[in-house]
Amino acid sequence: MLIAGLSAALTGCFVGDEEAGRWASREDIVAAAGRCGLPGFEPAEAGAGWAAYVPGEDPDRGPKGNCIYNDLRAHGVMATR
Image (tube, rainbow, N blue to C red; front, side, top):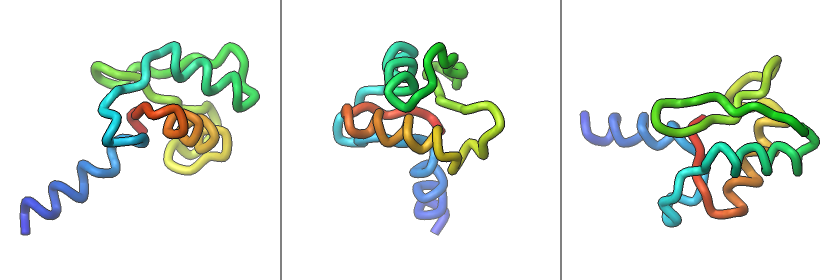
């Protein structure tokens, strides 16, 4: 039961193609943000990786953030969310 709960909790920590196993670089996120209409976007450091937190949006479901994370997923990389 504890393992299942921990597994479910950790599953929501990143967005991307888990099979690819490659975390998005800062440059990956900047490029995705540009394709989503956010030129000059500055990703946030998230531990050893990067996150695409868009100012003024709910970090879990804002439209521009969703665009960035969907773009990253389409390019086979993961990012913290």
